[in-house]
Amino acid sequence: MKRAVIIAKGDVQRVGYRDTVEKIARKLKLAGFVENLKPYDVRIIAEGEDDVLNELITQIRIKDRPTSPVSVEELDFEFVAATGEFEYFEIRRGEWAEELGERLDTAGALLHLSVELGKESVELGKESVELGKKMLDKQDRMLDKQDVMIEKQDAHTQVLTEFRDQTQQSFGVLDVKYGAISENMSLVIEEMRKEREEREESMDRLTDAILELAESNRKNKR
Image 1: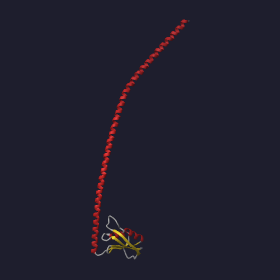
Image 2 (image 1 turned 180 degrees about the horizontal axis):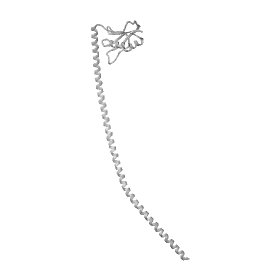
Image 3 (image 1 turned 90 degrees about the vertical axis):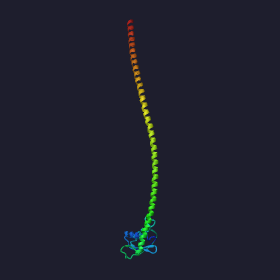
Image 4 (image 1 turned 30 degrees about the vertical axis):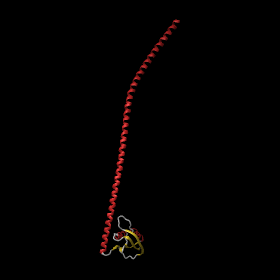
């Protein structure tokens, strides 16, 4: 176990830095105290294990945090032998008037910080609104393009529909025409078949007559 003697420099008085150090030290289960060191610094005395003391130094090095008015510009520290004289970690405060003034200063600093953060939030809100307007404009343009595409698709659909109807009508006409042609061809074929049958019958009769005449001549010669 060792003791860390730490001097914090920067914006560390009248900004609630001691309260922050006390919370951190208590979470780390360290013993010791934190106090203001005139005119501007803060002194921290903490006892504990080496790794825990190093963690304390890391966490109390507060700087450039948007939610805190504290800004630790420098930390001077050294390790010495622990005495074990502390039972817990505490804030050593000065006279009540000084402490009251520091509390008021801390409240004022936090109020100022809140106002600044509020202004930043308003600006961010304005930027978000402008961004939202731009996004809406883009969406409107996209919707307009979609409407144009839908109109073109409707026109194409109409053309295809008309082409389909005309094609069906043309096929209907062809069916009628070819139906009539087919019927006429059937009649022609039937007439040709009858004529062929009649010619075949005539040829058969002629053949029979020739054969009879030949047979008659052959008998007469005898």
